[in-house]
Length: 346
Ligand SMILES: Cc1cc2nc3c(=O)[nH]c(=O)nc-3n(C[C@H](O)[C@H](O)[C@H](O)COP(=O)(O)O)c2cc1C
Image (cartoon, rainbow, N blue to C red):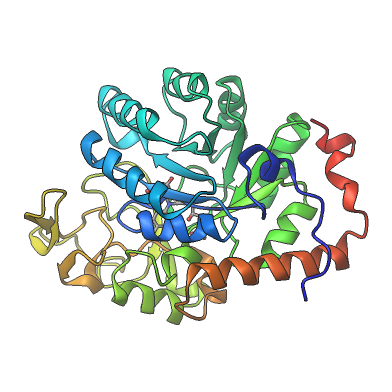
């Protein structure tokens, strides 16, 4: 018994989801199966496209669209590709995405990218890590700005925890549709973010451990077993994505000690099925397609691992978050209309 649904937040209305939660697009982890399962459950599933070439992007989107008739998104990471290659990814996606889809960017994209998605009628979500970048994203026409805190798993865009960053951005942009990333693994976490002024949240680590995630089983087991003290912010996994700190699970490479040689420690199946070598210190995550020294690879994970206790189907996960969120909302916010209030007006 979940009780009456709280009034949908602006994020739910803008993206057509039924709980104010987006699954982070995660390269090598968030494929069609995870994205579609999250989407069918009513949250925002997002396909991680990282460095995927255009022809594979079309196939991945078609595969996802065939598995769900609800909204889902794609994720592009402009800073890991040249502007031309990123534009080619977006153009390939725009040509095949259904109307109900949306586009997410990690970090500020070149201004032509949100404009192109907007012209195609696709809502644009931009993840940033500073108040300045949030303002720029809104100027570029972002429909939703995701504010990433340092608790987050994966690469980090700023230095503040999510809620202080949210408060700062909300002060400057009272009418913006804002979500937080980092610190979200339960419905209580989500309700707290909404009570602090967010319109929703994005979560990564909790979905990386889900049954449909393409993360390697060893990686999933480590997320489930880990506590917050088992994560660390480092810069060591810099091959393929340099100059960006990242939060990972501690392993032999994140401790003190000299940097070792970047010799190959694993192989991963590439887009055409050929096996590609993975060097030590690669930014690539260990996925179901990786074989080798999984424990020595980059296992991106946020502090939320503290509250991630099982590998379970994404549908079960989303339903639990929805139920907990509703319950916590009823406890903390008896007034269902808060999203129409002065601070959150359209
Ligand atoms: C395994 C993993 C891979 C990630 N890969 C991406 C990515 O490819 N693109 C992206 O926009 N964000 C990526 N992120 C970061 C998320 O967008 C988000 O900031 C983060 O997951 C939020 O923190 P949480 O993991 O504690 O929920 C990744 C996160 C994780 C845990």
